[in-house]
Image (cartoon, rainbow, N blue to C red; front, side, top):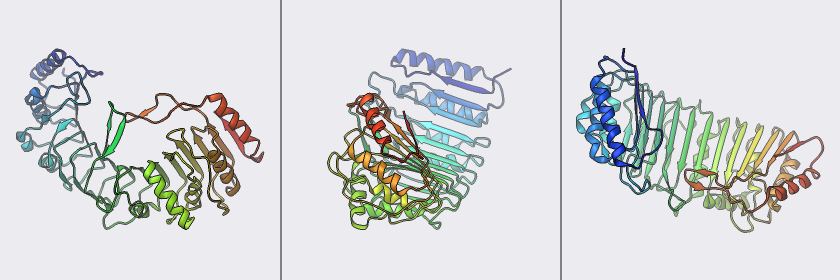
Amino acid sequence: MFHPNLVFDEGVVSKNPTQCEKYVKGVNQVMKLHKATTIEELTIGFALPKEYSDSMNNWVQFAAKKRVQKLNLSLYSCGLNMELMEHNCLFSRDNRRLYWWRLRDCHMSKVNVDDKDIDCLLSNSPNLENLCLRDSHNIRNLRVSKARKLKCLKFCKCRWMRTLFVFASNLKDLFICSRESSYLFGITRPFLQESIWIYAPNLVSFRFCGVVTSRSPLVFRDVDQPPHLSYVSLGLMNSFRTNIDCFQELFTHFSQVKRLRLDMELKVVLDMVQRNQISHQFPHQFINLEHLEMTIKCPPREISLLWLCSLVKAAPFLSSLSIKWKDDDIPNKVNSNIRQLHHSLKVVDLVGFAGFRNQIELVLQLVEIAVSLEKIILDVRMPRDYRQDGILIYNNNHSAETCRAWAQLLRTQIRPKIDVVII
């Protein structure tokens, strides 16, 4: 009796080439002895030296021959320096002729497939529902249009991808991360994609992290507002060509969403502040928005945060608001005041509350305009080593006791009907 799931996952990244070689030989031996006609899953998850690319291609051919349903190739670099080591395990051209009748789920990480490889995979996989590509450096101009049953599509850190065209009528979940992190130097930089074009009328969830400019547009074709789209997460990054109009044009596609998550870096925040000082209102309405979560990189000088109130007012049915500060260098002065009342907001959650003046003024302003506010959560915790994609987000220069004391003092300034929870 042969097991239907073949999972070769080392669990940790080995730096020993000899150990990698033993693993490769072990996998080859198992596949040689496996006589079942079909398998449900093949997972390869360990460091693979690039001289073993032929072995990887043999494993792929084995999976196709066994009519696998789930293929997961999650490779690692094999060497002392995980950041700089190349991982060019190439996808053989012979694999383009493979037919994947039963394949439903395909995940490839650090496997250098190119545009034609993916096109052939999509053409020969009539039942493919989930496709994830990560750290694939040979993709340049990719067109996803031949997988009619595709429901979930993910691209992460495909370094040289310049254009992406997605035409998938049944696609539900789309994730695009066009940035990379350096674990050695603690920096994040965007890839310079030229354009992303999307036709997905049944899209429900959209997550994007990268740069949007006039030269690097993100465009929804034919359907300006996907009618079923309910969750959007945007990680808006710095760029030398940042154009706030492009960001705001992007928001026009999401006026129907119920859950919105925004992660804004410094240049984006400054552009938002500048635009708000001119108009004092957010240019678009979010008529169905119920839950808003924001992660904000704050500028180091006197910059207003009350543009957030403009965003709150643009969502008349917003019921919960969560704000997470990316660092503790918070500005000290608020430049404007907004008096319009908000009737739906009930919960405000502030993570990384340090008691800075503009944080306090923001809370008091929300208390003033949100007449139905029921609960405020002041979370003073700032983890020392909290990392997201290798980037140090919080600097813990303030004691929890001091932050908690400011939170308790703030509670005395809030009307008694509002439940103030200090964590």
